[in-house]
Length: 207
Image 1 (cartoon, rainbow, N blue to C red):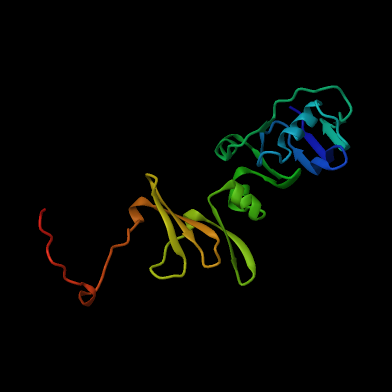
Image 2: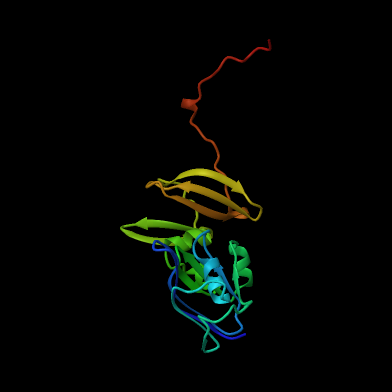
């Protein structure tokens, strides 16, 4: 397999719809590249451009040092489009995350997961909280978060998922967050009260 390079590659449909918006990408020879992103982000159009089934509006497609932008379809098997993050993480050497015809981030699966470039990538890849504090926005993996006994976040749901317990929270600013707690570390809350608040009731009689 030869290296593939996309240079300012653009595909427009009509005067208003831009499916691929000036993307630059280099796929090393012999690597397995997965493209990720929501429906309509430009994944399939990019693949069709590489394969020669779509005509580029602008930019170049270079394979093995040869500009093939205007050549007949070239069937290539090293770029894979998927909606499954798990599949991409397991198979790919190179992950490309797209949105609205643009590349938001490209890198190894570990790089993209552990160091998402922005809030969109962090949310799309999943498993991250995108939080804002003192005017700064940052991402924290859910499995690196823990629940403190006191705080201003509200627990919205608790889901047992085998090895982990997924706790969904609503932050004071309304943002949603998660904490993924190992099952053996999860300590479910206990209901407590004072005796002064315990109001005696008359025993019910069977009717």
